[in-house]
Length: 108
Image 1 (tube, rainbow, N blue to C red):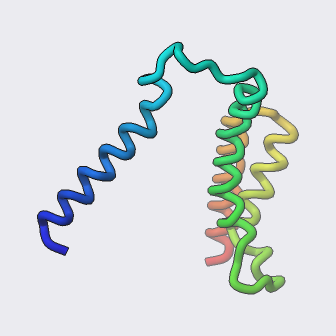
Image 2 (image 1 turned 45 degrees about the vertical axis):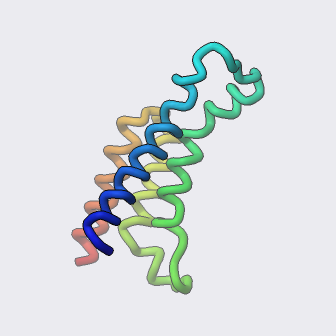
């Protein structure tokens, strides 16, 4: 790929990103989302977070019992339990990372 082609790709991606991220700002008050869509959008951050984290924890080439000892698995379990008990995002992150680090240290 030539330098000119690289710049065309970079500028094209910049324009596409700018348009898609500023779409609702550009249309302003002319378009109003329905109540159902607004309620559904409240779950988007949680759904995106699960979509990022779940494959790291659960998706593997082939499931073996030794994968239950991975730091990712125990960090996820600790985070889940911490959130159920405390309902605090801060403690969820702290306890999940602590479990991840401890299992990582013990396993190595």
